[in-house]
Length: 417
Image 1 (tube, one colour):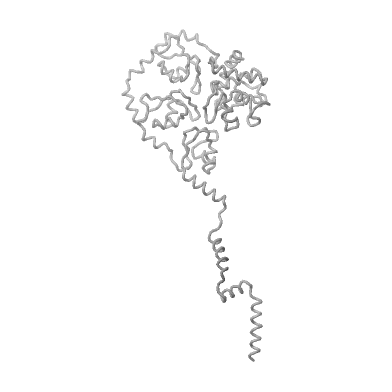
Image 2 (cartoon, helix red, strand yellow):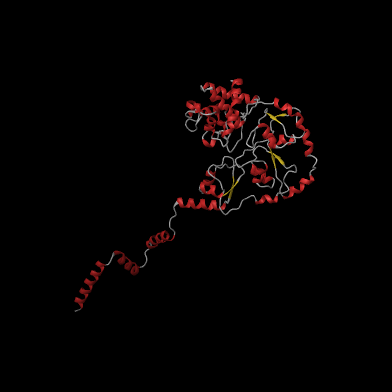
């Protein structure tokens, strides 16, 4: 009886072993035989992978960017910045930065301007309240190289909008070294106005020239000329057919009228008509004449017609006063205010007058190849108006300015070509 029972048990045990999965059998063996050394090596890695899932490098980078951008709530614009590069640098979308700051795709930003990087951030100029004692007693400021309207406003403890309004400027306006800006007073300067000797302004009417004209000098502004002659800025505009966006140039002759004293000298004013109605006029100084000759020479070498060369001269006058400027709006430089950031060349290249003129004319000899479009690359430019052709190359915010220099441009071509 016992042998048969053992045999039966043996068969049952073998049957059970054959029907149980290997993993279960292994577990039973492990339980019965103790824990081998390799068990820790196998179990530990499995526990690690389960408790600390791997993080994608892309997710890690994005997380770092979000944390970095969260730390910065505002950004002060630097030279060469664009809204898209600022947005990219802070891990934001360009459209979001525009919306947060109330800007559009055509808006212009300036060095020194403070942009918000978060919709919940209030305007940054709050610290300016602590500087009300800074405004100049005279209520004016002469622009220096590198200045921006926002920086000037902050320095004098007033808002940017206040400076813009006081000077008839807009957010797209450009200021220049030597230009005089009116600085509106904050709470403290209001008391300073009565303190200033009131009789000072009446002394100005004696300043108008006997001829009723004034020749613009380097650094002059319309507001400064008007103040010097004891008349309003609007009267200078009216007498000379100018507006708030007009540019004046050294050597330009302005008619002065509107003050009490000049009434007697008014008859001499008609002797000053320097240009046809709606046209501007300026005699070129040595620097301007040298640059004009370069533009004309390049145009002649490329076989450009007189109209094309005159367009280039008028464009250079509007953009730089025909001077090889080392500053301008954003990263604009040189005779034509060409921008390195938009493919016109390096800073050194756009300030090379010969190369800049070739790039403006474009065509087969364009040093930029197909990166930019010059005058000769524009279909039908010969049939366009003077201003339309210039605007097609420059894409300016003030296209009408080019037309005012058409007559003078042909005069410079005749004199220096």
